[in-house]
Image (cartoon, rainbow, N blue to C red):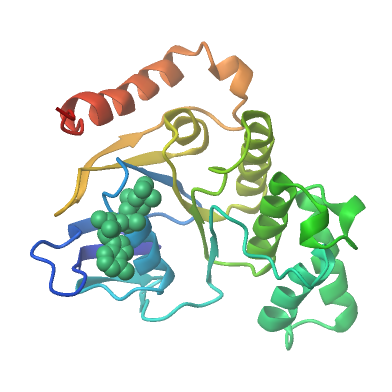
Amino acid sequence: MERAFLEISQVVVRFGKAAAPVLNGVDLKVARGEYISVIGHSGCGKSTLLNVVAGLLPASLGGVLLEGTEVDEPGPDRAVVFQNHSLLPWLTVYENVRLAVDRTSGRAMSRAERDEWTRENLALVRMTDHLQKRPNEISGGMKQRVGIARAIAMRPKVLLLDEPFGALDALTRAHLQDQVMDIHTRLGTTVMMITHDVDEAVLLSDRIVMMTNGPNATIGEVLEVDLPRPRDRLSLASDPRFLSAREAVLRFLHERHALPKVA
Ligand SMILES: Nc1ncnc2c1ncn2[C@@H]1O[C@H](COP(=O)(O)OP(=O)(O)OP(=O)(O)O)[C@@H](O)[C@H]1O
């Protein structure tokens, strides 16, 4: 069997002297170009898992291999986009992306190429008209778009998205989901995304990884989303395959792994 592009093996994470580990035995193989979503109740350890893949947090046991190389620190091959943008406020939109390009491709590309690459990635997220603005002059959705452009511009092997659309209103969220879908289709980027939103998971993913509740959380089920790409949100809204995938995730979250009721 072909070796997985990204391989998470028997990952256990225990914080300090806590009695039970947060994650216990997470195993997942991701193929190159796959779009994976991780869904689960609040606090089950989704961000913890993403942070292990990002190299921001060491696993207590087990580990992560990317193209056969062990992940033991953060690196530009795994770009992360968080829920709240992390742009540098004193730099313009252009400069925020250019800085990442200079850091990751400074030696491989000429100045002119880095300039072009920066503009190209900002064009992908439709920010060309706002290059000289600073983060406090643009909307939340625009900031997230710049964050995504910055991540993509680093040409990561894996794009790690930690609830990237969570803080946005529904319409902005839909636009940005479409842009990320488009980028994924065009560039073939491997994506691992954390979300709370069932529709978002079904719309964007090739597979949905459903986590059991913590502590000792692990992968409960993995759902293949058998929908052809490119995907169109309007026509999918009534597609029986979309609806049945959606129902499977809802059943997992609200029946088999429901949170205990508050008395
Ligand atoms: N640095 C830390 N030290 C101690 N406990 C932590 C630390 N980081 C996370 N935890 C705990 O680990 C558990 C999982 O947290 P995590 O943020 O990974 O969950 P999550 O599934 O991403 O949650 P949410 O969906 O609410 O963002 C929580 O109980 C949290 O309190």
